[in-house]
Image: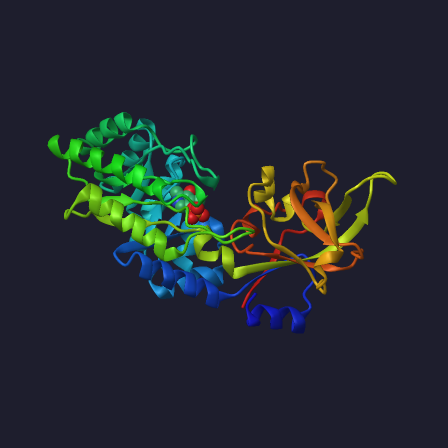
Length: 378
Ligand SMILES: *Cc1c(COP(=O)(O)O)cnc(C)c1O
């Protein structure tokens, strides 16, 4: 945890649950990624954390923005991004929203199907379009496969069709899955994209851009490769499959940009057992799946959790962690091996680390009367 966050908690004693984001860490993450992939344009995936302070900081640093809706586009514009630094990267858009984005000046749109391409032609004539291809999502802790992208044959046909429409076929995108720890996954996708570029070139369609998506990880309970390793692996793949003819590249980091910048402080509401013999204590926190920790679904993302004032490791025993709502789906970790001190009691505070990404945006408006996750950017 950074000094700045430690001081904030100590001096402000904010109501829990709350998320505190250290903007200096976001800036560092941006610079690290920029250094690791100096030729790629960075489009921050706004959905990971749309706090105005984060967007303004990134706009000032020169970042572009990957947006999935008109409100996200408006937030990026309000933060100081010009429309040429915004892409409408969702492949599932209402035609009216495409038109609105076009009116706001956005000229870069994603698609993965024929009807979506037709919508873009009608609502955003002349715009640049890129086709998203399917990936397996293998190796990712939070896969994004199946729902997005089309296969290579369809991508070829659609980009060929786009040539004869009132849009500019501009490139191809993919997303290897979020929290992707297998560097080779980019290689598989880049190999396929290079093939597609060559096939289309023969047919007279010159694509200029490859969008490498997100997937850059945050360190949770286990180590992840360094940012520089991702940069090197991606650069090597581009060289291998494209030779000296490197296309323009885009990356869309979400988690990797903000995950490590945030810490949630939460309070223990209850510690109990289900029977006198119950070997595991249940620990109920004042934050759960509906308060922002949705990525604990299937225990996929395992945040490091620290109990304040706990220094004696030998005193810890296994617990089941759950949220405060009256919904039995609101259990955070049952199988993952979390241990907490035997003396833990209601009122104690815990810190949930690496929670800067996909938390505020996943917190429900007011399920069971619990307020959405409060946040402070410092
Ligand atoms: C969510 C999303 C991202 C960000 O993914 P991370 O794994 O968080 O970096 C990037 N691109 C698109 C199209 C997305 O939907």
